[in-house]
Amino acid sequence: MIDRYTRPEMGRIWTEQHKFETWLAVEFAALDAFAYYKFIPKQVPAKVRKKARFSIPRIKEIEDKVQHDVIAFLTNVAENVGRDGRYVHFGMTSSDILDTSLALQMNEASQILRQDMDELLTTLRKKAQLYKNALMAGRSHGVHAEPVTFGLKMALFYAEFKRNLERFKRASENVAFGKVSGAVGTFAHVPPKIETFVCKKLGLKPAPISTQVIQRDRHAEYLTVLAIIGGSLEKLATEFRHLQKTETLEVEEEFGAGQKGSSAMPHKRNPITSERVAGLARVLRGNALAALENISLWHERDITHSSVERIIIPDSTILLDYMLATMTKVVMRIQVKQDRMLRNLDESRGMVFSQGLLLQLIEKGCTREEAYGYVQSCAKKVWDEGKTLREVVLQDQVINQFLTQKEIESTFNYSYHTKHVGEIFRRVGI
Image 1 (cartoon, rainbow, N blue to C red):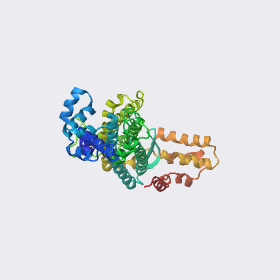
Image 2 (image 1 turned 180 degrees about the vertical axis):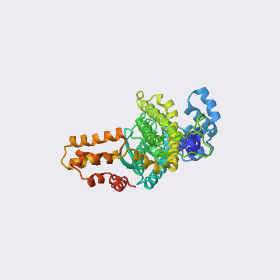
Image 3 (image 1 turned 90 degrees about the horizontal axis):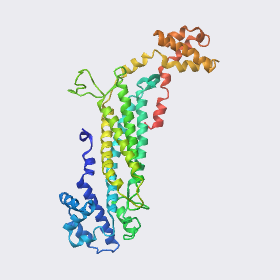
Image 4 (image 1 turned 180 degrees about the horizontal axis):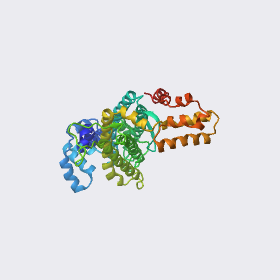
């Protein structure tokens, strides 16, 4: 199912083929640096590039023996390069390749995720504009509160995903660091200028200080931001799910021709896509927790983070790519039932206007406690007797001592609640 929506290029980033290609790119950049600063003969990089090859089956064969993936990779490359292979990985340690190439892969993944978020933002913006004035009941604790518009709901999510995009940009920048500082980060066998050259050539920044690894607070921030974005997607999905309940039915996910909702009940049309996205957000949160656990390593390095990252970073980026693309399609194709929204709003029998009455009574000299009691007493009759709030208030002797019938009637006005929608949209930037 995920493959249906995930961009092919996102999956390709995390293939073994691309991983080893990226490792080789890091080694090539290091050779260029060593040649530039005349640590090795200037013709070596071109000669190595011409002959350098790798075979995944051969790497696996070597790894089975040596139990070290980077050594297996380097051994296989050296088999193809010959004597000039002695300059490959000169003065470097495994994490110089692993962490720098991981930064490159995460950079690639980030570009796709930014495109995903841009597309979702565009879709939310269009929906907000289209339904800017589509009246519906606002709800507090699931109970009708005061009128809002469906456009305001979409504008709210648009603003939230704009914040998510800014968070993501910062987190992406903080993982775009490479390191070629050697075994414990002291540059003992490879001078800092080599690292600076390599990182610049690869489009990364050099880590100001590292141990044998780039510090994992960077990766934890990145995975945490992915989890926050997942939480926002879950929030959006949950809103649609609630609005699609039978007794509400103000929006509905697209239901395709031939689609079935239940093996037992032919009438069912369920918000399954939103439910899927809401569930998958839990996986992102779990992966973020694992990333937080990776921050603390022994001294200059251990590899407790390594096995974890081989799962959580590919999985989280692929998963968020899928979730963003999926929810973009849901928003784009959501069926908005404006007639049902108005009908549901009327089901409150005017109680959504209770605060307006409260404030009018206060303006007429009632204390807040008195005014609250008068309106709440009327609302109780609406709940118990099935009348409208307008009917009850117009007949209420106490309230009629303070408000004229014209003043009461003026309170029951939906447009009063939407008069600042345009200003809110301008604030949000829609």
